[in-house]
Length: 198
Image (tube, one colour):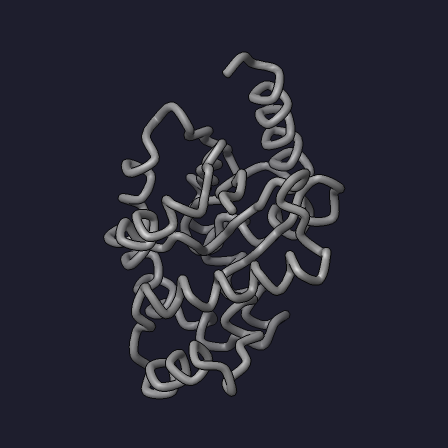
């Protein structure tokens, strides 16, 4: 099964999770955040054990294990009837994280749009991450050095994925706006895409 997909792309603090959650409440969209998949991992499963082997040592989880966990989660949601690939757009955030993951996923994803969420006001990015850290008890994100490292990793490893998909699929969205305005821009683009001839 190849899934028709929308990718939410952007640096940490750009608002991917917020927009993904909102879109996921609208019929016709199923939201899957990579972070949620990792947090819900069953450590008794083959991929779960492999994931734990790396994450417990603070090591980066290899791409094939990350994609395996993701695939297992999507299959489970499909079997449970929560994700209906024949009618739903799969909305992804946090995956693919690098070009290698994008290549591995190319046989499973029919990417229709890539929404590049940009926040030119860097002070807002820091503020969002620090507020989220307190709200979700992700206390490492309060540290400015940790935030700077995450932003560097995004620039070096994740942002090049945009080149993999190419300009034709990418829509830039300014996330300095209120979340409802960002959502409006995303939905307007999807509506325009759906009406335009293939």
